[in-house]
Length: 115
Image (cartoon, rainbow, N blue to C red; front, side, top):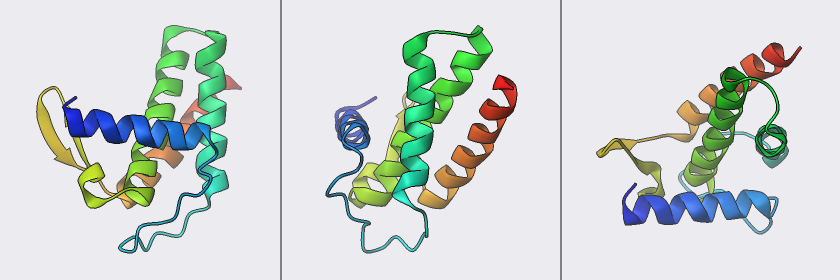
């Protein structure tokens, strides 16, 4: 993570912990998604991580959902520069549409794995 990436990761995570209170969609975002959907996934995956229950795969899936919520919040509620992430030293642009699709797919898989 570089400094800007870390800054927006922390800001988005903190905003999610505060239930996205006072967060407004960025003007260039046309995606129709409810804050409650993001918060539900964030809280659900966070509770799994805090409980430290289940096997490694289950916790890894929960961590993926948790991090995707953070990335989605970055795309929706923060300036354009928040939409660049750094993974293994390389920069990648992310979009809200991509992140929402990933979140829904991984959340469904996590819920199925739990049952």
